[in-house]
Length: 221
Ligand SMILES: NC(=O)c1ccc[n+]([C@@H]2O[C@H](COP(=O)([O-])OP(=O)(O)OC[C@H]3O[C@@H](n4cnc5c(N)ncnc54)[C@H](OP(=O)(O)O)[C@@H]3O)[C@@H](O)[C@H]2O)c1
Image 1: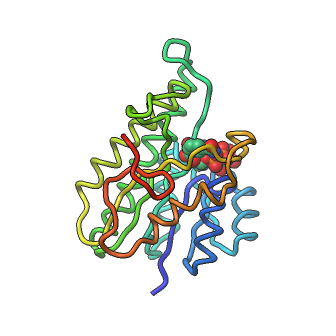
Image 2: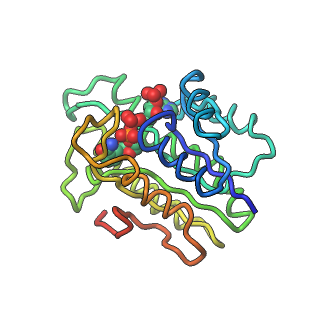
């Protein structure tokens, strides 16, 4: 049985590499992104289905669900990110809203859209792409909105993992510093950053649920 995975913010960077690895592993993949042209270029190059999805827009999530119709989504990767250089006291409203809508509320809506079906069918994998900068244990580094929304995404991961059953898992991970348009150069290759995501997406029954990983190893919340 061919599984289908949907990845957000997948027109470039780590999300796109996750799609590439999943297609290579034989999964059907839905590449999503907020710009129609960028999505269709990526989807064509990857041999995947492309769909427009702005995770910060509730209507866009609803429209995607409608367009997918009977397509069963077995795996979801919440990868899209809004990144800025904010401080708690200096952040403006637009930056604050974009960060929460993209990094926290969007993943929540997508889980609400796709997790119930996974639970009903008894199989599903959700990976929330987080960051060590969202970890209390690692010191909550990074810009304010990024750090707080990723800490929230970690909390959301734990809460969602407690509402699933059967062979359904919800995990968070940190890819470490990866070269991408958003992070600049000097980090690791996207393939290394994507590895733990793909591992969590494709693990057999009995794998981790409600965990936080880097390089396939649990890390502190
Ligand atoms: N790279 C690192 O060093 C690093 C380290 C730790 C964690 N991470 C995490 O890894 C994930 C991927 O990072 P990356 O470096 O690959 O990022 P990236 O290259 O900056 O790509 C971000 C992606 O998110 C998309 N996006 C932004 N807002 C969106 C929205 N509202 N709806 C849908 N898509 C949206 C972007 O689309 P557009 O092209 O339209 O802008 C782009 O495709 C993120 O969750 C990030 O926090 C990365």
